[in-house]
Length: 377
Image (tube, rainbow, N blue to C red; front, top):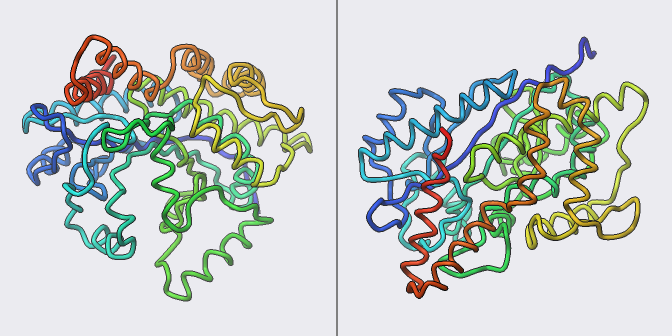
C-alpha cells in the first residue's frame, strides 16, 4: 500500500571512452588506473564491458546544485587520474574512428559471460550512454509512470545525441549508438504493463527458465531498477557537455513529477501505441534537434524547438518546485546550439574545409570531445 508521494531524488550514471592522448584512439585502461580511481571515488566508479570504457555514478541527489558538484568531481577525477597514464576520457556515445577489432573485453566474469552470450554483436558494443534514476518508491507508481514517460523518451534522446560516427564513417544518424544497442535482446521501448505484478510475472518467465539471472539483464530504454526503488531512464547518449547532461536529467525528473501531479488530479497522459512512439524515437535518432517529431494529438510533424517550448511549459511548475527550472529552460539552448553530435559533425566539416586530411581531422574531433568533457568543471 502506498504510504507517501515519491521523493523524486535522483542519480546520474555516465559511461566514458578512454583515449590515448597521442593517437586519440581508444586505449585499454591499465589495472593501476582503475585502482587509482577507486582509491578516490570508491564504488562511484566501475569498469565497463570493454577495457577502454569507464563508468561513474553520482550519489543520490536531492538538488541539481548537488548533482552539478557530483558530476564535476567525478569527471574531473577521472580526467586527472587518466592523464597520469597518458589517457583522457571522452563523454561521447561512440568514438569517431576506433575499430572494434582492436578492443579487449574487461576480464570480469559478468562481462566475459555477456561476451559469450552476445557473440558477434558484443564485439560492436563500444558504446557509452547516460542513465538517470529517479526515486519512485511505490512499485505500482513506478510502473504507471513508466507507461506514461515512454511518450517523452524521443524528446530526451533528441537533446542528448552524441554518436554520429562509427569507424570513421559518418553514419547519417545523430545517435548511431542506439542502432548498435538495439541489436541486443530485451532492449528498446518497454511494453505497457497494468501493474508491477504483471511486470514481475513477465520478467520472471525468463528468470525461471534460466535465460537471465534477474531483471538487470533487461535493458529497455526505461525500466524499473532491479536494485533500487527507482525508474531508470536509459535511452540517452552520454553528453560531452556536463551542463547538457544536467538539463536532460532535470527534464526527466520534472516530467516524472508532472505526471504524478496530474495523477493526483485524476488526469494522466494519453497512451499512444508503441508503433507511433517508436517512429518519434527513430526521428530523434536519425535527425536530432534541428528537425521535428510527431505531435500525435495534432497528427502532424512539429519542429522540435516548438515542442521543447511546450514541454518546458508543461513541467515548469514541477521544475520550479524541484529547483531545476534554470536547467530545464536550458533545453532551448541545446536546440539552438546543437548537441554533441552536431558539434562533432561541424568540427569535421571545418577541419576538412581547411584542407586537413580526414584521418587528422577525425583526431581533432576527438580533441574537441576531450575539451568538452572537462569544460566548466
